[in-house]
Image (cartoon, one colour):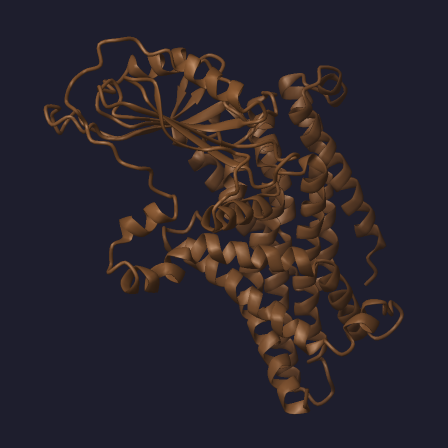
Length: 512
């Protein structure tokens, strides 16, 4: 590569990295905690359900409890278990029955507790785990602006990764083994940036690609809709498997009681390792009612074992099925693989912990890149006014990014202490206002060393208080949850003790 091309790539890498750095840090920091979303939610609710991914609920009782509050005839009812929580998602479509009045013919969505069949609305069920999960793709910003911002940030991050590899290509191996802590500041930051960037490169590449796909796929597939499908978006979604096959309503009520548990038992008996994660009932109570079970094979046996079976309820005949042991289509393979590698839900706690550490490593790579930018401009030929401006920019950047650690730890304490008042509004107000106050405080200090040191210390001290707050409020002390095999509760407390101890040790190792 000649010098001109090297300089173009180098400056492109720098500019693209600086532009997306703050948003990218927020995405990676919140995304790292999102690997433990289910554990955090269960910890907040003081529940420790089974870690099984499949639906084990009594379907007959669940549907009866749903039917008690809403006439389901002619509607499509969807039950989805997307996480290791006690609650499942319930979606009810508008009825296809033309005799139902428009006022009564409404959609519904809520969560159903699989233990006591209580119903919970989205707003009242909002949790810190859900907040951090949604923060990592900026869902708090008005839809679709936040989604597109996160998606294009991931896209430009992919661009920064590629240009970074090309810039360092010739010395990529030799520079990986170089670390000069006693050298100049720029050399130290550069060595850390290069070495940790290489360690996390596969992880970062995967999340850049999958993040862009999930957030801006509508933009990416728009040309296909116009060219290949003549603007028929619904047909494209059907081909991609996002829209189920539609069945017409006969307008004749089904005059027999359906044992949905028997159908579920039949599916699990035919496919012993199959995990049912979705139940779809179309045209409920009609003679043309169809029942579909979707899920996947045991991930330890088959990584991409998607399965599906559809019954016509009136005749108990299998209308369509795709066995989990069959070869998966190309489209399904791509969708499932992208989903699995992004969520990291196929390797248990070990994979989640590794992914969390790699996520924090990515945060450090982002910060070290910004610090390289600062020290590279701290030269004698640079005017003092420009130096002060560069310093202020980095102070603001570090204050905003690093304040996420203490406010996140403080939020964990808040949702326990003020458990009765916790709602979406409470979490939004507490987290964002607290984040703002922390950021303003550290910006006013104007000291990079102080920001680095005290964001770590504050986050560590607050993190060590989280298990104590949980024990005082709920009585579930660390040793009690371990003895009672309440692993969700135990993990969150143990996680914060470990993380806080590590970051506290790092804070005392930082030198000015």
